[in-house]
Length: 181
Image (cartoon, rainbow, N blue to C red):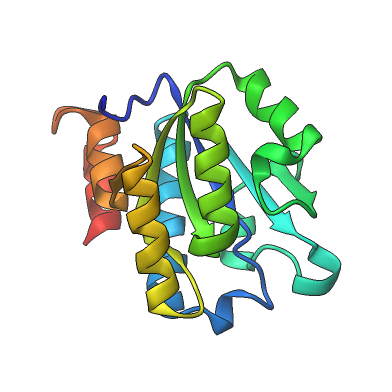
């Protein structure tokens, strides 16, 4: 498993939506860590993509995260796996990047299925475990174990940020290290 590389990675924020997030265990930390990843991606020029599972029923992406990405990077879907949505996958493939950093909801459904499908399609997949959530902690734990067994890298938001920066001499260090505190 390689390190996360800012030049070859993209961030995929999965289904952190208005009607779903409040039901998720540790939702405040999940939202905060997703925001850290989005801010770091912006600073490091890593493309970010956001999915919304059936937004008519589950609402839009929570405002704190939606304001960190452009509308053209938000994709509505009905498939659980982002990799099964043709428009979303066309956008991802168009980025020309082979490392996928995943965060979002729910760990045992959409995040898990997306991670497994992207891995099957040849992507190197990193899941920020402190930026994913499920309604039940046990569901998240089982999803994490299953992804790990499938060869998907289980990381934290902080690991991703510092791996992308590589050095304290990076121009983004001062700003991004403050996000982690």
